[in-house]
Length: 273
Image (cartoon, rainbow, N blue to C red):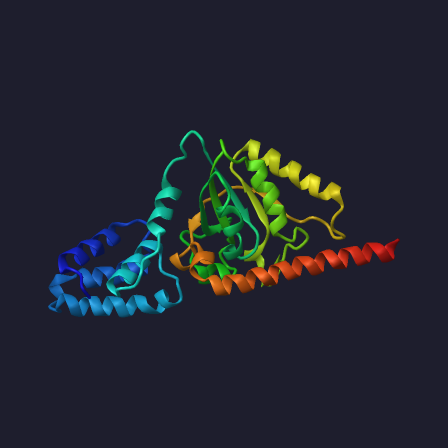
């Protein structure tokens, strides 16, 4: 490790004070910081590294702790600091936020991220009761959260209506038990609205989808008030950029699903006539 001991100790101290650090992570950091233990700092750092490793390999550390873990192991760090800063900062006068849940958040980033006027697309968890939920907890379906994306956008360049219109193209709005290959309550399709204007647009867009009669089953997408949005772990941020091969396969699977769904609906209507 080509890092100065005093720099590493300062980062450990900062992480201990960081309110986003989970308690078990903080306990490991406190042990590494304990100079009165009589154990050399490098040995304490090895213990910390081994303690973080199981969750790091499963991509379940909180963003700042994950950055620290990658740094002390000489691995490339992600841009989670930028995501955290953008998420935490108040909206400038021209900025607005949209929150959509539509199955696995890996597939909900790219379609928005490349549009003009998009400032950032952040993966996270929302709609549940637990504080600082982890991926494993959300997937376990006992926190009440769903996987979602928070889209920070410049409304001078793109409107909330345009984002909602894109959202409907990314999901199966008749499936409230998951989406495509992702099954479970944590993958339910939900539009989370931040104010009365967003609710009006979302409700109207839902009615437009219903009135279009494109689907043979009821439209079940929920529209709920936005609650606390918890950032997902580093591994999940910008997944489509970091894991191109895996993302490509997932994207192809979703395209095939929608193609077959459309074909099935058309056949059903043909025989109904």
